[in-house]
Length: 77
Image (cartoon, rainbow, N blue to C red):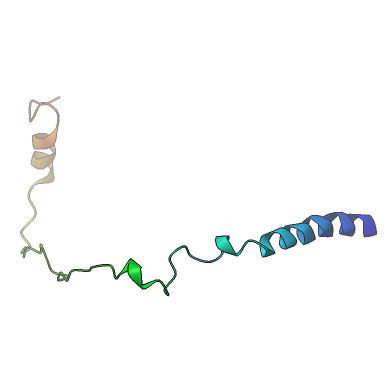
């Protein structure tokens, strides 16, 4: 039992030690202290940009619409 525990614990301990000495992977590349990076420009747009008002209409016969969109455009089967 102890051998299995040791076999499982050793790789975990070694992996923890190797990741601890590499802070470059943890921290971001762009530091907020560096002011020469500047601020990303943003633009304002409304949520309703491109909205078109549509009103509900009565349903059309589904059979005719299906035949109109079929390959052959209403030629029948």
